[in-house]
Image (cartoon, rainbow, N blue to C red; front, side, top):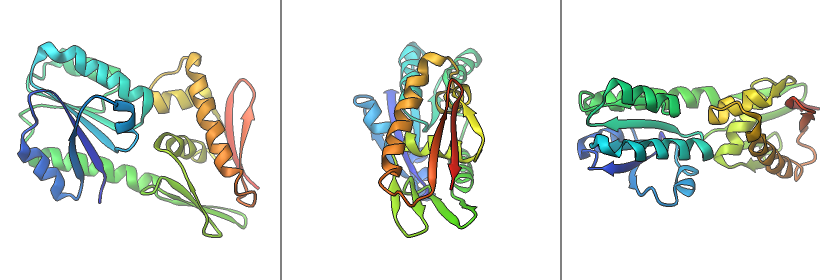
Length: 227
């Protein structure tokens, strides 16, 4: 399975032909309610927000912001009336792309497939430092240790760990983490990063021989190092 895609119909319903085309690429696609949004997006790889009434634009904006606060899932907006100003607003709020009825089912499927496949190839890689080994398992959102133990992470924890890992032995600043995680840079959001780091550390500490350590660089950010 390529990934899980949740469709939120704000107004009207996304045509079944688009859903069927996405399923051809082995995506799991389901229509969901905007209720309990945080719980839903935690378990999904991408969200498509469908809207066929411009009057409902405010609700689309609210959903984009809500998703960006709690998850790193891809967010695409599919609008029947896809005006240039609306597209820019959605992108500024954190949407990854906009689609309209001009986009045929096959085109949407190709864009989604290539975007998610690129993320998979970027995240699913092996890391070695001296005689210490671990592997990131993107499908499981976990860290596989050399002895076969697996550290399971939530979607946000996994995303944060991969950001630290991408700059191994270097300090990743609060600003960089906030920008990558939630597309914000204001320091009043640092508590979110700190909370995620706390939970990741707790899980890593259960495996004292993992050789993985997340160091706090006071007033700057965090650094992942292996020993």
